[in-house]
Length: 346
Ligand SMILES: Cc1cc2nc3c(=O)[nH]c(=O)nc-3n(C[C@H](O)[C@H](O)[C@H](O)COP(=O)(O)OP(=O)(O)OC[C@H]3O[C@@H](n4cnc5c(N)ncnc54)[C@H](O)[C@@H]3O)c2cc1C
Image 1 (cartoon, rainbow, N blue to C red):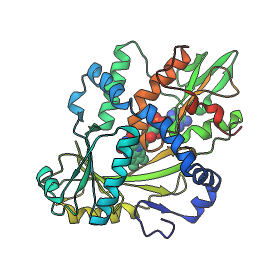
Image 2: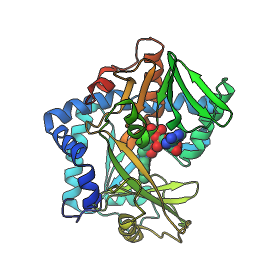
Image 3: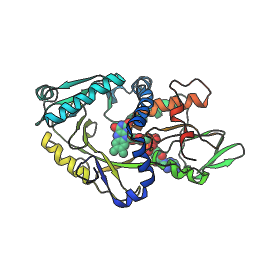
Image 4: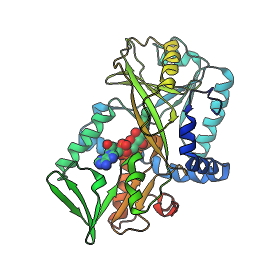
């Protein structure tokens, strides 16, 4: 990755310099013993993700937007496949995550449109995937309104103390509240800076584009050797890249996407691109790899819920529930301490 030979990570030197502090902390937290305890805290929350989504999907009537059946990771060489089986067995033993190891022939039967099946695939059988994540979030928003919630749009940068509480300006005047939650993903550190919080965050950009593939896949597939994901979506076959470390507001440099598209074209008939320009977004990653969920260390009525990294869509309902339980003084459904904002540097 440092030599930029792998397609998983791309970086610019400017961005490395700008994010050097958080990246060094990330490296420190990656030591095996620290990473083990991070993984176990992370597992406590993410193992609740599908059930929490499941409840909301049912109530929102959004079943048509999700599919069960899991996802697969293709390994092009026998050596990579053997390593992957060993790692999958370790994860099954440690976290009880079920999988099946598919031979190249079994993968061809499962995904007939693949031209290349390498040495086979690891099939993670439990996850769900969404064919239209934006549509699913819209369905949750409609459910929220049906339950009496109100959605108003305002610039969060107008956040101020107002008596014992807080206020935000909208075009129709101020909204006041005793308690507020900062849930602005990668923008959260900027909002909190004027309140004196210096939140270390690594911002990892990712790109995607859809293709009109005539015979798309049945389940999402990660191409292990080339660091991208192929997923059948409502808009077409989506190709999504790994992490780019760049300036938050830098123009698009989709070099990883171009490499991913070349590698994907070896696997199946992509058809034509649906969009002329790819989309990109930013994954808000904390140096200790855990989201910040809970009360702000120094301000009453201020709550944090950000830093969900590569899996904020997956973790949304579970971390929303944890936050709601903390705010209303109920017993949290998972241990809240590992996610506490108190662990962040002062
Ligand atoms: C390429 C890519 C692929 C990904 N794939 C997956 C995946 O497969 N599964 C998964 O679980 N996660 C995935 N993620 C990660 C996921 O998108 C994030 O973790 C998640 O979006 C974080 O959610 P959030 O609500 O905290 O922040 P966001 O979704 O970033 O939402 C923050 C919101 O705050 C708004 N905002 C910012 N500033 C202001 C302001 N001043 N006033 C008002 N509003 C403001 C923004 O417009 C934005 O709507 C992916 C991310 C990328 C970039």
